[in-house]
Length: 168
Image (cartoon, rainbow, N blue to C red; front, side, top):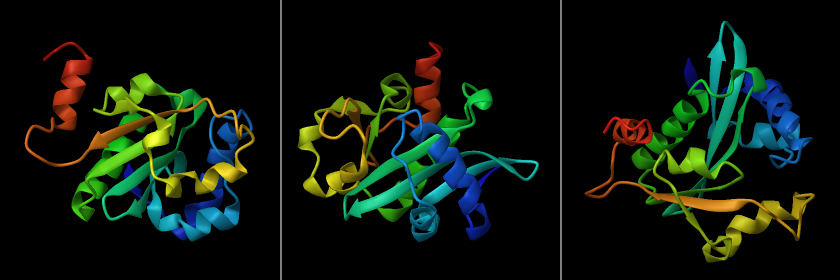
């Protein structure tokens, strides 16, 4: 089940994100930061256990970031991350955000959801505030991807999935 996170989820979100942060695949997040941004998070839960999380952080009137996407290692490849990013994109659409980006090592995953790679340098300076905490600064090897939201010609997530699977 996908739902918005609540305060009691903070510790599990923290543990999940930092599992990947120890491998330098995500930025570490403090428990205080999770509490401060709890309203940004979506979680995937099964039988009371948090399996995955993802956040949508609004940065400006027309820009938001999909961040902190983490799925338990044994549950990867089952479409859970896709469903969480889809929830974030729908929330962005409802908020009126025009562009959603992510900094990632998973280009193909995001491209399958309609994102395209861009140069990191084209993103506004506000995006880089969290980079100060990154152990890879200044030699970041993540890529930036972006997706336009809304507008005529935007494919639905279902259409993108069919294309990705070669069925459309």
